[in-house]
Image (cartoon, rainbow, N blue to C red; front, side, top):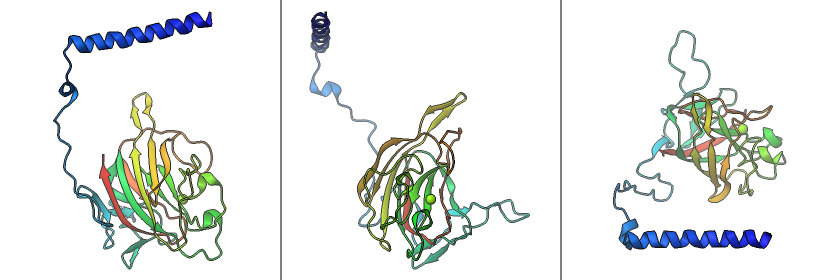
Length: 256
Ligand code: MG
């Protein structure tokens, strides 16, 4: 019986290939029949060295925090958010512990994001307390920033993890005090009036090494409990204040 089924499947497959060939022959296909010339992809000039590509939105170039604002509720009587409370030292943006997170004034969906970070001195901190910050795509989904230099913690919360969902494929962190380079490719979740249509997906390299490969998110990245989705549209990119003086530089983003 099995043999009969296998034979039937093979015959059906051959018949399909034959049908496709005869259709191609009937239509007189040529190589050019499956080539197109428009629309022409926009020309983008790649960055040289640490320079961003020509179509990137520069979120931080070492000089000012004008693209960012405080995540804390605005001061009493003010309708506009407070300025980003972090500081700039030697062209680096540094977390001011206890000042709160910061977020971009602009909202984003699908994007490519480049961001570099440096962990502060380890001192006597361990695990989640050492060099903790976070990159929140659409203000909701955390790619963990943590000192990964000989720092034991749960692997789905280590540097390069999608917090409490996905450990990195490999540990590509170098050394405490050295700059770490993230490149992030983000596919935003899609919602309609009935809820989730397609989940978020993320690809990440750390120092040029693939650490998240088209990971499909299960929802937000809460500290406690299981992930779930709450519908939203475009939202700011935000950076976490977790009480340590993590530094950032060269932040740019491309809308996709
Ligand atoms: Mg964090």
